[in-house]
Image (cartoon, rainbow, N blue to C red; front, side):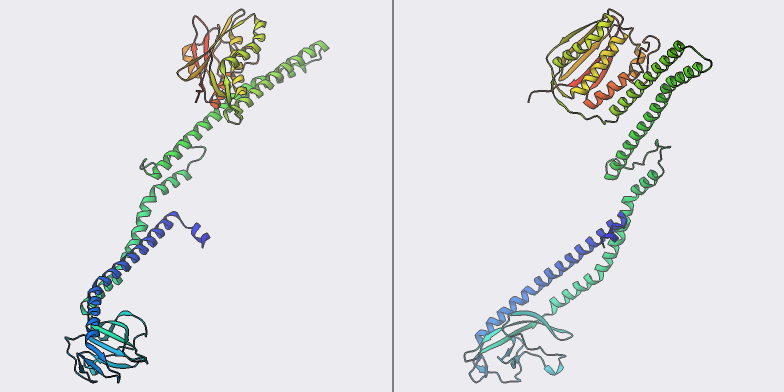
Length: 470
């Protein structure tokens, strides 16, 4: 049963649940209405029967010889009964009828009442003829001599209530199946109308492939659940499209960058094999090939590092960190490299605490300091500043290089992007350093800013949220 249910469509399930639930509610409602009306109609009759029983108990007397008296007068069997007096039956301890007092001719009746259940107090309806329904009250009746546990049955015409209840029952029996049929049809049509946008979304989604990721699902109403689902799916498609475009650009750029050292390796090797050479010449050719192989190795390492950073595969282990002390330590470590170009690094650090991964942050700082030393001239001063502003910690690295034209700033962190001849690529430069830096900062929840420095050069800033005391 469960497997069958799971293989049904959502429209079928909703329509079935809607129809089943509605049918059940209607059936319970109808039964409740019928029971309530029946009780309300029967209540006056039941009260009248109890009054008749009280009246009978005051006027009826059973003598020790089983004779029946009514108001002191004996009531022989077959005596015509006044219809204005209460109607009743007496049944002895053997379940035998002792006396029936009512204004009907028993020869003209279809059936007579059966003996009551001994010892029980019940209210019921009994039809003695098609047009004569009786409301009867059966209850134990004790007479003043041994073994006197008899039963007495009080009766009244049930006609008004019976007609009304029959009409109500007929209405329920006729209208309930029709209402259920309308409910089933309406449930199916309503669910079909509500789920039609989902069908359109499915058809559209089936046609979306890697070749047409620009297509989007139709959104009829952004407020309801299906509209929000389509909007979320469209956002996912947009991110997928951006990812594929980024991947295509990455593959194209990487192919271009890898082609140059591979071509150089091949060319140097082919030149070396054209004729016989001396040992020194072969050594020089092999040295050139090793340089290109080392450059190719470095490029592959940088590409892998960038892919790891952008793919979010690096584990982040955040911890509270005094940013001013951390930056000072990093500058002291890398300052040894600046001495080779007779450069000087100045640092101004104000107390600032952040929650971050020190390993990733160290790589970010080293990338910025390495760029600053690479593009600054011999004897230049590189300035590093740490400050806290409006709940953010900022680390600024300013160089004295040739600067970056304003129209290049927006694309500076793109992979393999370089700024013409003004920032000539040095040893190991591939245009990936800032792209890796930006990717790391994205993982750390920070930002990278780049603005021209005064009077010359460029200022790169790392912005991270400050850790507040709680």
